[in-house]
Length: 174
Picture (spheres, one colour):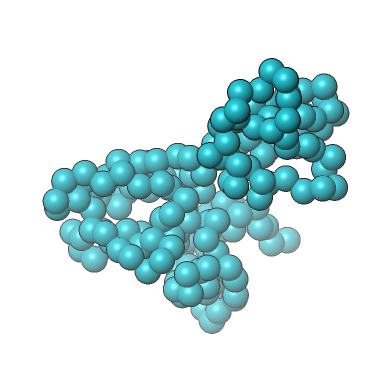
């Protein structure tokens, strides 16, 4: 038996990762559990599932600090939908249509965000793979993306192979 304890403020985030069919139990009822904590009780045979869920929860909590024209901006990585370059200006697009202009070059942001499932899809674009709703094939060997925000982006031909690799999509000829 395995027992993992979290702060209660994380309950909503944690609950969305657990499903009844996994036979995992979230509880606030335990003698040795402080009032502001919740516990996960799981059989050891489900350890790999719990590990995946913990990694996902950790990913949601990741933040980066980026330089803007007004100072420094601290953002949760999961709130970034995509980045777009207009010459020297890099526009950071968020889930709810808000944008910020950051000062770092796109190649530096690409390196910074790569561990958090961001991938380059064109000379001027980096997209958060977790924010893609649909992927559709297009003319000239391109791909069209529709993001959860409703934005539409294209994966240029020279970036299609690396994009597919990042998603684990492989054609028979690859």
